[in-house]
Image 1 (cartoon, rainbow, N blue to C red):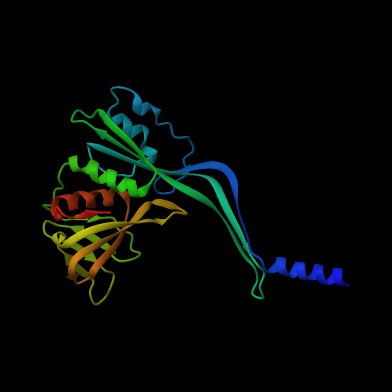
Image 2: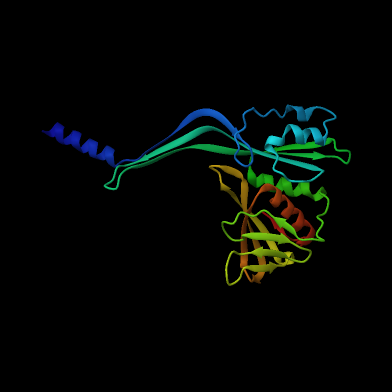
Length: 250
């Protein structure tokens, strides 16, 4: 009798528990927008002398972020070797569970000299370090042509839905009926911080960032936006041209 009670109690406890775990999986690699890469990346050719910009862009087209800068190539990709799973305890409403891969983003920044030859390459696996390095590399980028508004590719998910860069202001579409657009002077921006990728499950390219203003604007004192890599790089260039020199890059 006691054994039956103990067994029943053990089964009840087991049923109330949730389980989770990690498992090794076949390695997969995907490009900046989530496309599966069939061939393994081989970046050793970057060490060859006399390597030119055109060849770098051609051979690394599968990881090209699309940022157009004659002095800099930005490649981004992700790989996965592990996955995780979890199973929730059964309830009157039923059980639950899931299994997903764990992805890790990688970046390569290749700088070219005035003749288009590889001058420097930097591999970055940490996004916090990436933004600092990208900011440093873009100091040598040609200035943006702002005679016409520069439109950014923004993910309409939170904060800004549209962004255009002009000589004197950042025009932001809000997605709201009463206040569809608002303008913010780049001179009012005191800090930019970085909030990580928007969706690591399928796309590591779109990243989110927050602008902090010195004073309240029509959008408040903070504006969050999520954008693809080429737009983020262009926006960094814009801030270097138009924001105060005291701007904090975090």
